[in-house]
Image (cartoon, rainbow, N blue to C red; front, top):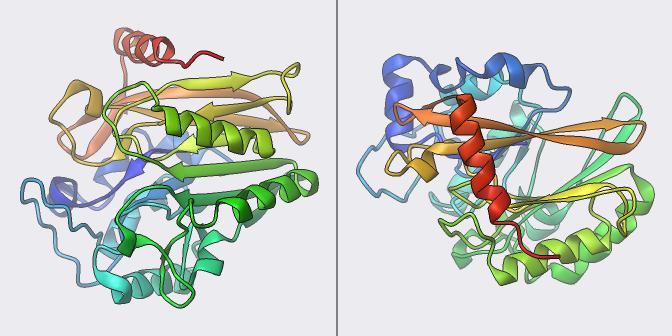
Length: 304
């Protein structure tokens, strides 16, 4: 599972200059080897999208050619809970969702209406059954799906429905994985509302709860066999993945969560550590960098 993906701005410019698979070249073999490779994509795919590297541009899109970078990773599923999914309006969202459908790419977290946006993606692999759910717990309001307009599943309007869905699915499938696009901060410490919301999902029966909003790596909260609900993990934030935030060391550092699932149980979560170079291309962290990243997020763990 990956963090913030927005192949826009300078990232998009580098892809136009150096090849559409440029962001994935260093790391693709590891990601492609996974049975399920997940991407959290924040922005719409539009065939008239043009790279706009203007500093602080917040109207973001990706050209369909950029899918080559995700294809090289062996991407299987895409979470669309980002608060930029409607940056090019409701019609842009419809066009992007249609593109996913026409290309047979499974997605969840967004939809042509709120019912579709909040629906789980059911999956099976090697006899293990999964339910993937994604929701947006942040602004702007025009990113939220309605009864007849496309967008992301807004968490707080649909909270009771989603919690009930998690409870129901926890009895029906092996692994329930929920991701939230929560409040954006630039600290490794999760804020109080984030902790409360993530733990509530965990208590409802989610095995994996992942924050896909954070532009810096945040704290992790593993649960063992002896804990209520059994083995699982809360990842409060994985940081950036393919995004151009080179302006600080913290925004350049990245996590991916490699979960090992066997016989219907989450056995292990390994944190892969990366560092962004050239506004577009992650590389693997050195041992010293990895130690710094992990120490930073482990110190940020909230008390239990």
